[in-house]
Length: 55
Image (cartoon, rainbow, N blue to C red; front, side, top):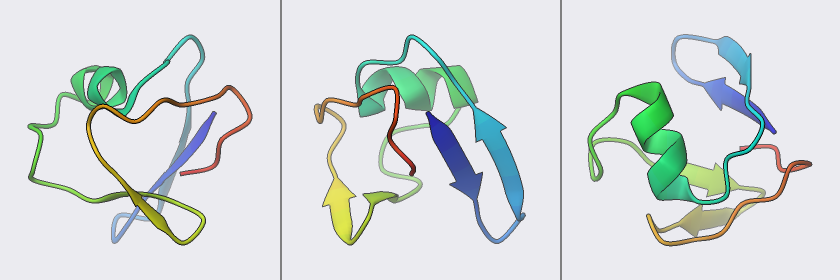
């Protein structure tokens, strides 16, 4: 999956990440401190993720 961190403007890629909660752990970010958005949808920590997601 592709992740764009703004305002830093960094693009990252991850594989094997199945939930927002896992992604936040991989990024070493506390839940509730950032917004995770897929398309126009705000995702919660329990939301599932797919390999082809762009966040």
